[in-house]
Image 1 (cartoon, one colour):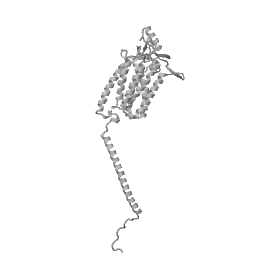
Image 2 (cartoon, rainbow, N blue to C red):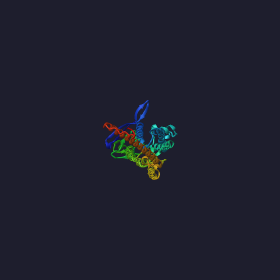
Image 3 (tube, rainbow, N blue to C red):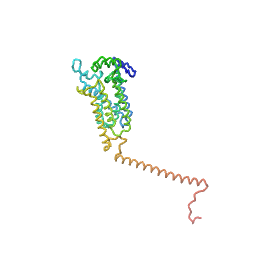
Image 4 (cartoon, rainbow, N blue to C red):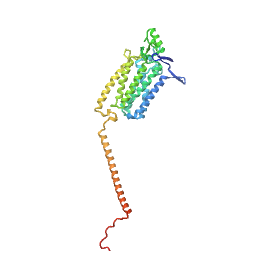
Amino acid sequence: MTSVVTFPGLGLEFELNRVAFNLFGKDIYWYGIIIACGFLLAVSYGMWRAPKYHMDRDQIIDMLLFAVPLCIIGARAYYVIFEPSICFDSEGRFSFYRMIAIWDGGLAIYGAVLMAIVVVLIFCKVRKACFWDYADLGILGVMIGQMVGRWGNFVNVEAYGGLTDAPWRMCSETIANWLWGQRQITSMEQYQAILDGTLGVHPTFFYESMWNLIGFILLALLARKRRVKGQTFAGYLIWYGLGRAAIEGLRTDSLYFFGTGIRSSQMLGLISAVIGVIMLIVRFRQAKTDPMVLPEELRPASPVEVEEVAAEAGAAAADIAAEDSAADQDAAAAGEGNAIEDAAAGGEAPLPEEQDSDQS
């Protein structure tokens, strides 16, 4: 399970073992550990930013309890749909075990994203929460998970592209053997060139990881001044869709659309980008007539809210006026007392009232 991977043009060499350690006789793979780290980083980011989106952290945890297992099922289902041969054994018989054996590989991120959208829609409907807030924040977490998770492909020496002599080319005997077995190289000269390092493949796992990193930074910065709800989610559909469509065209392990020459993820990437553009246009147009499309901090106050604020302001003003009046009365009383004390100190006493004239 150990592979030596080199980047001759960069002077880098790595000895990679898919297995991180053994626990109670069971191999624990680096791929799973890296995916788990990406998930934890994504959740941590979501919890940190939740107040900005007026979201309850406890509700996020509740949602994740449903979303995580269902997204794994979605990722596997997507892979099985477009690569049904994985469900059959060497004798051509259907095997339920092989269909669910995710530990042997075979997950597709698009399946997980599509399932996540469905889960969040249902969850928000039941909990009467705003889907667009969850989508805008959640999709940033998805980008973190994708950015980190792609390095699991590197450890497994997979998700690479076709032949190239670029300075950042990736070379390995494992890669040469796989390409030869898939008949993607047909000459011994090409096979030997990969072993020698004069020819390699595109490290498409790295391309996608960096594309997600740049996209995350851009969308996270734009999200700080979110103009409409759904803006970040639509931005993800556009950014990731276009990037995935381009990068998928380089890969050698693509899933194809039901036996055609169309790459499934490439097609879905372009479709999602178009949907993202339409979504942005629709959401910004709706914002002109529907205040609910705007984030809370940009939403104009309703007449009821204005009346409530005015009533609160009037009550506060009345309280202040009453306090000022009481303070003035106390000050006047204190002034009269001081005048009497000053007169007494000077030897003068207030004149008695005039007596009746018939008194002697």
